[in-house]
Structures are given as structure tokens and as C-alpha cells.
Amino acid sequence: MKTALVTGSALNLGRHLAINLAKQNMNIAVHYRSNRNAAQKTLNQVQKISKGLLVQADLTDKNEVYSMIDKVLEKFKTIDILINLIGSFIYQPIDKTSFEKFRDVIESNLYSTFLCCQKVLPCMVKEKWGRIINFGCVAADAITVRKNTTPYYIAKTGVIMYTKVLAYQYAPYNITVNSLSPGILKTSIVKTKTPTNRLADFADISNAVNFLLKEESSYINGANLEISGGWRPGFE
Image (cartoon, rainbow, N blue to C red):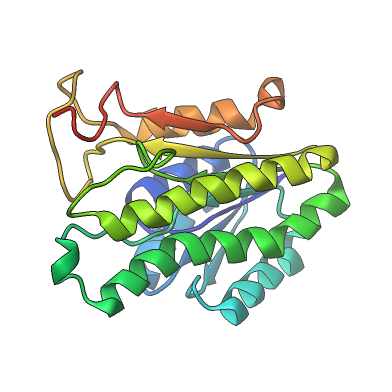
């Protein structure tokens, strides 16, 4: 029975992904930073289907990340699947952005991904199997200038770069590292018109997760899959 750690799984997409993986007969580590009540609701739903564990951590803090992952390993012995979803968003002109907000966006998106991967990968190497899915954003695989989301795009471009180098480095151990880049979700802070005239559902994202986790998809490694219905920044 495989174990999956889903960061930021207290609410919304994270909760959906945790439940989606539980339905596939996996142990689920439900992570939260501050909203314990919401995370407990996710865990309750997970435990109706499979085994689960509630873990708390600020993912920008190395000690907290390592302690969290040790707790999961103590309970379930392995972490086979890591979903790095967590990350703050900002919509503000760069000249109005404080250093504190800039740092939060960079650290919560990029540092958290780095720290979780760094701690989990040795476990996957030992098992000679692993799947990591990091979350980018549409067009972050190129230099994209967005006046109100500059720190966010800096961070997500870094996530995709990091994804690709890990994919190359850990491929010999039967570990794949890919990124998913959603477009405009129904829960997105900023919404805009899309070519399909609809916003992305959580199921659109979980379908892509399921695809990357299939053994038949094991040669897909270092990819960045956009789930946006054809939407690109600047097209609207």
C-alpha cells in the first residue's frame, strides 16, 4: 500500500487531491500549516476510505519540514508519492509589494518544494520507486512578465527548473519528477475569460495527477503539463 503526502491539503484543491488518492487505496498524510479544523475535515473524509495522518508544518522552515516527514515515515514507513501543492499567491504591482510579501511568495512556493523534495527523495531512492508532482503555473516555463504577479512567476519558474533537474538526477532510481501548471481555477483569486468559457474544475487537475502516477506514464519525467483549456497569460 503506497503512501502519499499532499501539502496544503486542508481545503479546496489540496483536499480534493488527498481524497482522490485515498480512493486509490493509498495512505494519505494530510498537511496543514494553521487551519487544523479544515485539515481535520479532510482527514475525516480520507479515513472513510483509507488510512490517514494529520501533519502540521510551516514548509518554509527546514526543521518543521523534516520533523513532519519523519512523523509520516514513523507511521507509514515510506513516502511513495509527494504532491507539492502549497504556495502563496500575490496580485499586486511590484512597486507596491513589500519585502515581507515578496519573501513569503518565494519561500512558500520555492523553498517549500525544495525542502520537501530534499527530505523525501532519499526515502524514494531506498525504495527505488517514487513519484513527485510539483505545482507550477501556466507560462512559468518561460520568462513571463506579469506586472501584478511578479514574485509568483519568479517562484514558479524556479519550481519548474528544479523539477527538471531532479527528474534527470533521480531517473536511474525509477523516480519521476514532473510539474503541473493549472490555469484559472474556480477557486483562483483572480479570474479571467478562457477559450473554453469555463474555469478549471478540481477534477481537471486530479485527472492529470492520476495520469502521471500510472505505471504506463513512467517514461514521462521532467515534464511540465499545463491544464488550462488553452488559456495563456496575455491572451485575454
